Length: 375
Image 1 (cartoon, rainbow, N blue to C red):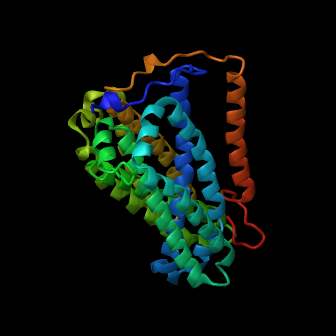
Image 2: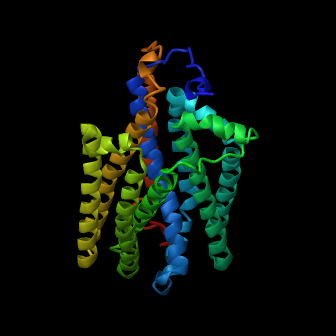
Image 3: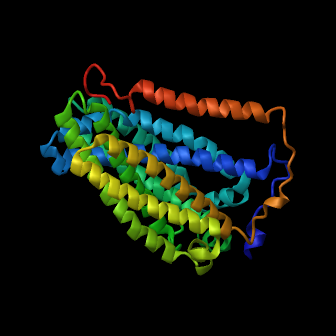
């Protein structure tokens, strides 16, 4: 069967707002989701590095405890902020996403099982880290491995959804749904690109922790700053290698978009590269002078811009893959003007409330909690 024959018919129900509105909302909500995911996964990796790496000689157990207590809050934030972009993907690309989910049904189902297990592990580590630090470290390692597997499943599903031509062969090879997209050349570099970025942002989380502790506990904050800053720089450097691999693995038509074929795609790639270089240079300067304010501002500000550019490039790439099959002009649109403004107000208020909750909880607060173990 040819690819067009395998793609379900477009949902006849009209969109309640123009197509471009859903695209913008998809980009914004996925940006928020990926920020939370990077802080969660990268923070967990940095906690393991602090627990077992060279940093153990320098307040490693304390860093492990400080980060581990945040994880049960960060993971729900990832899940909550992931609901909206998943819904927008289903609205715009449901024909492709649902089908790829069916083709790899069982691996996709196990995402929920692994997510529940990782969630439980984070809570165990948060509440038992002091009584049994050895077991807490092993449980956190297992939970992090679960998250890595979940991310791999997502990469499989999303790359498969962009390649309808491969659905038929995979489905008929195993109609029971035990399929992955391992034959996709971009799968591994795409997956590593996201995972290494998470480690970089995890290093940034430690930098923000150091900034919050700098006045009240400078010795400890200095150790945290150097571990986080170095992780941030090394992971960002590794991103260049993986990024080149990813670009070379793309079909020529796709890679050409980012090398002059599309002004917007090329500009976004240039912003991402320039931002990453600037972040490395400024972080190195901040570590050399122990300027925690420079490290915090430059790392957070520049990386937010870089991640937003990468999120936009990801969407451009998806549209390029689906160009033969996906035509936005085919959507029926019946804008519900009476509801749409209310939706925007509630959406913006929800995002603001989320940041307020993080600040109240202490994740990015610049004053210490009474027990000196928070941020």
